[in-house]
Length: 143
Ligand SMILES: [Zn+2]
Image 1 (spheres, rainbow, N blue to C red):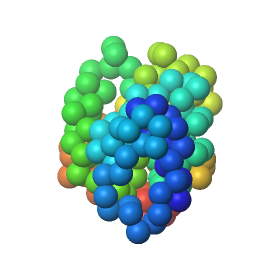
Image 2: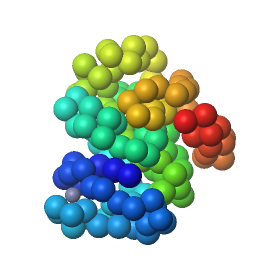
Image 3: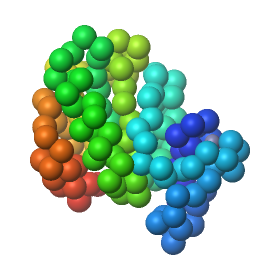
Image 4: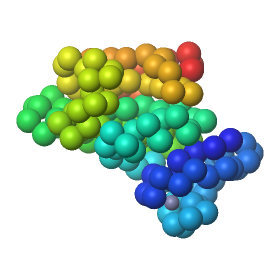
């Protein structure tokens, strides 16, 4: 399977059976599965989402949005707890305007789960960590 390096964006090929180890990027040596979220701009988004065999959970947010600020640490916490189930990315809708427009993001925070470049599920509004994890698990089950 393939996954995108969270640091340099290189596409790494890893054997399925190794999908329970942190791994290391073949190009920049960064840890592949460290449970951190990745910040994506318009260019990075396309690459990250279409070159990943794992599902991608994306948090669309903006600096001025109060609920987004509450959601930020919750999203990071949930991401840290499931490093091998999916990749977690954040899209600042003011910086990645093309991506926000393409996904027709009308309210933030909006979460979208994608697999193989296709949208599987989306959720608008902030949730506490247990509910967020539950929603993501449900979405991943459909992926
Ligand atoms: Zn790398």
